[in-house]
Length: 354
Image (cartoon, rainbow, N blue to C red):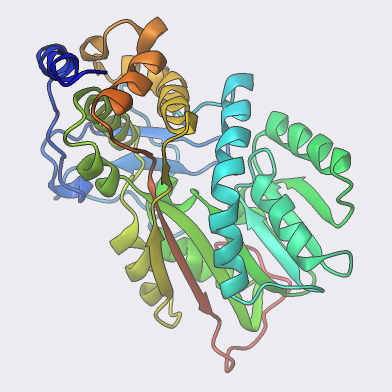
């Protein structure tokens, strides 16, 4: 593309897709946050986004609100559980798994261990853990959604992984006759209003010296990286805003650090990585994610008119990268792991939330 053509593209995209300034990474300081509640089918916990000053509604599980409604009815998990969303998760996992594997290896996961994976979805993290612990180890994946469990079981069988099982359960009802060597999860805690309470409960299922390791997202770096890409910036900002309005926290770096401390665990080992590149995965990732959250965008009256024709959106995302000679990127991955203090007393069987 000639320099004058590139300048013409910049001018047109700036006119058609104005850059949306990144919002505060603290959802409680963002004046545009919707007050909304939805129950996640993956974890069966009600999740609420609220402005500062609103009183928490308590339940028998501590600070975790339950059975709360928005506009008189329970709203939906922001990503849904359609066939298309399941396939999106599989494509996303293929790109994210190497990062998560590094996190798990750094946390000491290895052969012979017994691992609990929460919010397993269609099974990618559980299957990754199953490969790391080997035939002498075992992985239990906990998932609420029946369709996702069926998909996960079929995929594990097809992959020949006989050391991983999946169970349908609320996270608050998981019990174990013996402690686990570790508890893991990816992109799960952002959907829960009290990550510290979750980690505190999970730690009771882990042997002294065992590990808790989680990969959670942060959207702020992506907003910065796409600030000079009008269409990308509009897409990223709209997706992030939809997460906020649906009760999720898309920026987990500080929340994750504080949650480990508040759960009574040692300060976690942490780092952040941002997948980037010049291949078509990234435009596809943004487009697929927009398709998954589009019903929630409509529910929360978030207009996507600024994005133009949805039918050509993916092609235009790719074209913008080419025209402006920019790499694609996705969310920042915040890895955090910590060990249960050796002085802790194993308490099994236990039920999360007890």
